[in-house]
Image 1 (cartoon, one colour):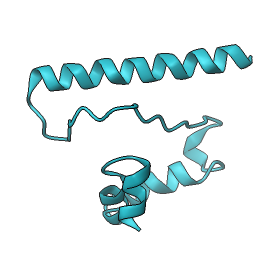
Image 2 (image 1 turned 90 degrees about the vertical axis):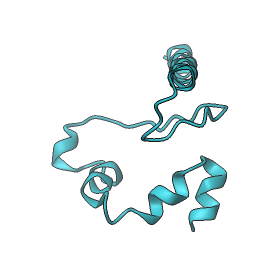
Image 3 (image 1 turned 90 degrees about the horizontal axis):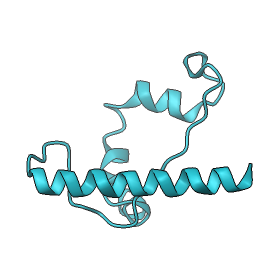
Image 4 (image 1 turned 135 degrees about the vertical axis):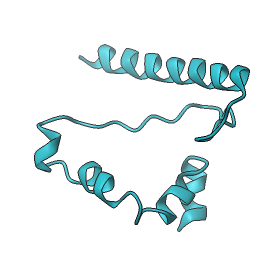
Length: 85
């Protein structure tokens, strides 16, 4: 299963394989009626390119590039939402 998920987003397979560690958080994400969601909706966004940043990355230029890519991804998604409103 992990390999298939990595095709969707690099690293997603590893996260799914470690889901037992993340079970409480995944329960909230998977259940739209979960009491702690309080009517909030979630949208998963994946940048077009991977900057190679992981949880312990300390390379400042790489982290900066990843942040900029994330900003572009969110901005593009919000533009699409605004265009349909």
